[in-house]
Image 1 (cartoon, rainbow, N blue to C red):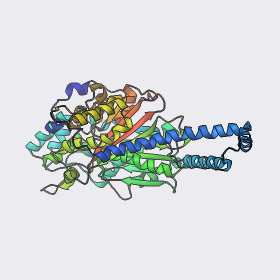
Image 2 (image 1 turned 180 degrees about the vertical axis):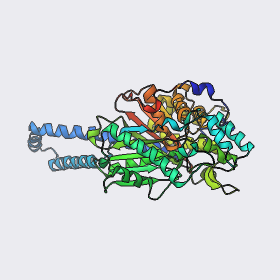
Image 3 (image 1 turned 135 degrees about the horizontal axis):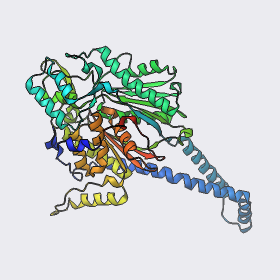
Image 4 (image 1 turned 90 degrees about the vertical axis):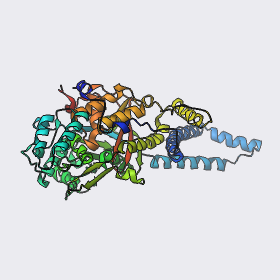
Length: 506
């Protein structure tokens, strides 16, 4: 399977002209974004430096006390009439001890990713291109030109011919997208993902302290999080959140929320469930910009178990190192580039603007400007700074320098928004094909599975390549609003999990 997507994915796509536009990373640099990155770096560095210094001072004082050297110093001061105020020395030591105790109490708790599970739908929901197009031709709202456009998008999207569609779209047209069918899809994905994760980790549902569910479009009452609490009979004190309308980047926003909550609640376990509802997203109108999502989005979901308990450190796969969020919603163009609305005929769908890729490039640039100081080696940061200065000198004609992020990370989990999106990120970040392969393979096998896509990519990496202890993983996702979010994980142990989602594929 992992070879077929290369042979069958054309190089041109719906947003190819915009995808070829590389942003100038050295022009119009937002200094506040760079400063934010270095502020975060200094915060981490200060934490790392304070602990060993304070521990060394206290250890030395304790050694001197045990050997009687403090008493000798006092006697020497009295005999030689040195201007040594021992009360001041002892008060300083006590103050240092108090500062160390405060640091221990206030320091950020580590966030461990214990395990995760990506959903694989039953084989009966596999959908060939031809089968889906035959069903589409029987829909009353689509004319010949619209169908021809949708078929072209399907063939050029980088999505494979055997992905998964919900049961409602397998029925005899016209398709039934009622509330019952939407709930049925959500229950299938969420219940299946969470049940498999809990069994794999030996965790009972009653042990979950925090539950966060993200689904952009489908928001029933009771909520999706309430559906999980009811089905798995979680305890009444479980803290639940339901994130909606945040698009494909909601998975990392949920991780960010959990990170903040786990700083407040000690010895807690958090469950994050990411999905999207395809039954809800069916668009039956004829506006081309609103037909694209229906061609590339597919059934999928992921469940992620996180913890701040020290007892989980030994079994955890990864530890969260950095998380950087960028939001361009203040700009009207960015705000409206992915927009849920009605068309002229009253059909509801998600409209993708023509400048989507340009906005995504701008968001990516803003995000990595903040992320760069946290992860890039010093040599890359110096090259970038030197290039930025040189390009401002009169008469200097230099190409903008794009930092080599392959020196900062061993694995890349890029949002599988479509072949055009992956092509643009490959070009903008100048990544070699081998680092892009997991994202392209996940897109080919499962299509765009929204906020859970980055977990499918990581599952492909673990299954096909494996992750070594100490490897750094970069997850990058885009979402409506417009948002670009990054998460950096460090592998705590060697990971070679064989995920069912990528086993036995052709």
